Image (cartoon, rainbow, N blue to C red; front, side, top):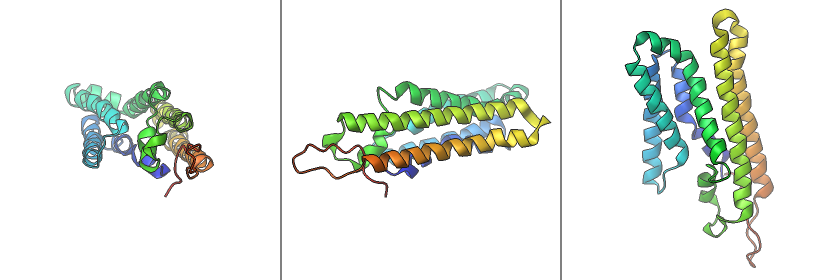
Length: 202
């Protein structure tokens, strides 16, 4: 499993978080939704739809509808808080499903033989990685909400909350993922006793 593939899986929400600073809420959400739909279509063509873009498409579809139907005033008021709310919703979903179906399982299966997909080690490692990313996305959401609350009264603090925390959280999750994969990546043994959790990133 390549940690970068997980990072790219968050493109729709990241695109929305960036564009909502310059575009009306509805259009920013629609752009993120379009990116999610493209990712879903590409992964479907390659043999399997991943849950991560699907959940993001649902979240962004809600904000698209709200943005285009709430009216200019309410949509403008909501926009600064929308990216934080979207990240909190996605983070909550990731944490809630980490033990039943870790979202990283779908990324890890591409580099691990099918015979190990239900092994305790494989599932355990992916639970830990999914939990890390869930917490990171929650931190991003909290940072965005904090930035929206601060507003323009403290531009430096707003910048740190809006961009410093997300970058730090993503880097931390990426580092933990990469380290965890490296610690659990090893070739299966001929006797079948070895149960790799993930293949090395490539």
